[in-house]
Image (cartoon, helix red, strand yellow):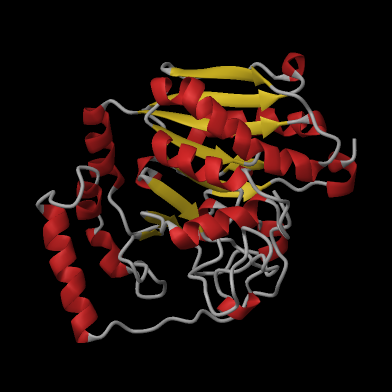
Length: 318
């Protein structure tokens, strides 16, 4: 996972909702409850528990939910998604020596990721013979996709978006309903389920979720397509965990990979795209955390997906 902590975390900047904003939210939720806005939106009706979280922001300015522990009812959501008979794809790139992280990721995914639902594990690798055998539950299967390696880890980071875009058209649109894209040097540590499924999903970067906008490491070069001016930006999103419907992921990855290398590579382009095309759901840093660097603050009631300790120089340059 690319450099989780690049700045000291700062105190959260929250603003209270005024009466007008509250009224607009209520009207929005009425429309959601009647199914007017989208057939996918009834999921929001299961978030009554969110009223119990007063310590965190649970709604974006454009009224997308921010998912924390205590803001969803997983039993109701599981019933909804089982009725839809959804299949979820998990994409992961195990290039060069990064293949050593694959076994732990898959084993912990079997324990915590989309339990009770059908899952395709899409493993992109230049070393298919090194892909480990992992015992899987029924309805879950590993699919190895051989791709070329790259001299630099930055090239892998940028090229993965193009590969995901291509495979969306070739396979994913016909095989799964939703895609979740994660880094390989992670492990699942707690429940990660259908509460994260929405058309366009982004995750708050753990190093910046408490920071002011001026601290975000957006691409600042005006000549770059990933450029975000200093007076713009909503949140800073992680490039290590994102997803959505296959069609939306295809649009995102296609837009992001046709660009020059930016300050933080694919993550910079991801943030630019999500500024223009707002996420329909935002995941809290529970879904992408580094306990070694950041500890375990009280606001994080659960750590769901965490970074695996590693020597970046050893792994990236071999």
